[in-house]
Length: 334
Ligand code: SF4
Ligand code: MG
Image (cartoon, rainbow, N blue to C red):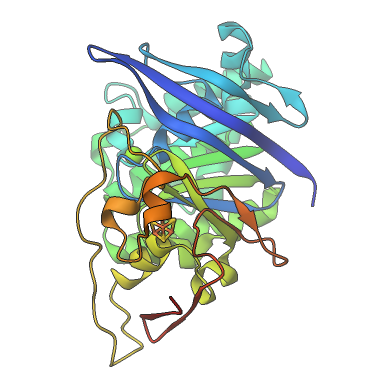
């Protein structure tokens, strides 16, 4: 598969009253055309900051301190603001958890759909209206002509999310970034939106970067999965590998902390403790204060990224011993 996005050794820093803190710590990954990479982890692990670094929308106190971001082989992390702005929508688009914050409440759906089309394609208002209606049809919105004249508050949450996807797709981006796009929706609508994203990805051969804390969403849409913990990538692999052979204790913890309705013997086992703050300097493996397998070595030395033959990447000293998860229970040889 053709590589679309490449992120190499990304370090993203924030200026705070207590000095500079690293929210993303040396993270590398890639996304191919027609592929969905899910970035998972608890809130505050750096997954949203990773996506904002890619699209150049970091808050003013944040910056890419080192590393590179390449789109179709071309570095984009140091592009001037104006050039990055042109890429947004046409090359990379983003949708957010709460469409109400991204949609303008005082402008009609039609206006918000036409605007990027007129701006980027230099087409007439009539032509943009036609294309806008087509886009609404494409994302499964009934009575699209009528919707064009409505305001966001006149639509349901699911419909608003579809409108946001339609706007994101207006200029045929190669990469769609979706940050928790279904968290605010009820489960039926959630499933419909995820299906829609899957369909569009296949039809348009888009790359998709899906940010989520929900392993259910991962199972639904991911081709590959990257697990982040406290600013670091701790594990990456195909969705089958991650679900069937998770190797990092944190990933195993994530999988064990969601109910498995297919398994009557399943026991829910939340991960003890909480995510450290960004400021916290933790020596060795950043997960060690919460890891039930932590050894002296883990407290002293940061585990590197170990790669397996199956294309699985894992940062854990015990990657070879953490052998299998059976019925939700970790079987480790220690
Ligand atoms: Fe746990 Fe050690 Fe592996 Fe870190 S390196 S996840 S502390 S076993
Ligand atoms: Mg977030």
